[in-house]
Image 1 (cartoon, rainbow, N blue to C red):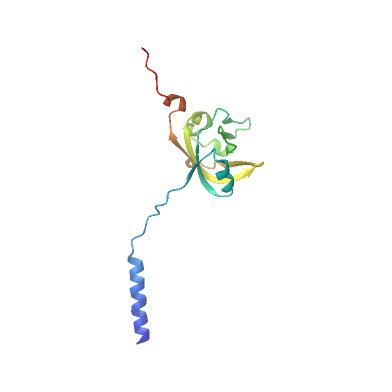
Image 2 (cartoon, rainbow, N blue to C red; image 1 turned 90 degrees about the vertical axis):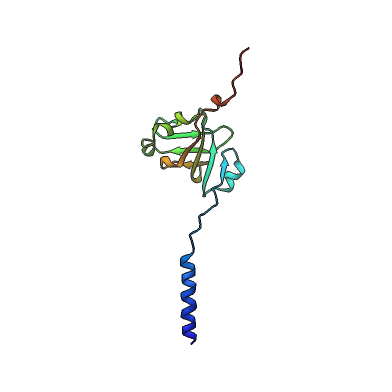
Length: 142
């Protein structure tokens, strides 16, 4: 009788668990500003998403590597030459200067400075495609 009861209970339990609808992960990733140095230091060696506006120092090195730099931040995005050649034109440093982007990747230290290595184009998402200077309200001429 116990074994019959156990089989019934086990079957009922498994059916109940198997029929449950899968739940979506409703938690959104935390997106932090590249300017938040304390947050960046606290999340070293973790997968993070940061948001910022690359500045004019963002460029291609003589060796062909890409560097994305930000005002008021020590964080650098780095892209090796081999990967840089695969990035579309709209994700290259010169195309992103002044635009707001989000980047997801592992936050590491390189020569005591934080960086994220870009390994594929999907890591970079353009949030606002207009340069900051274009977003300023225009004054009407009288």
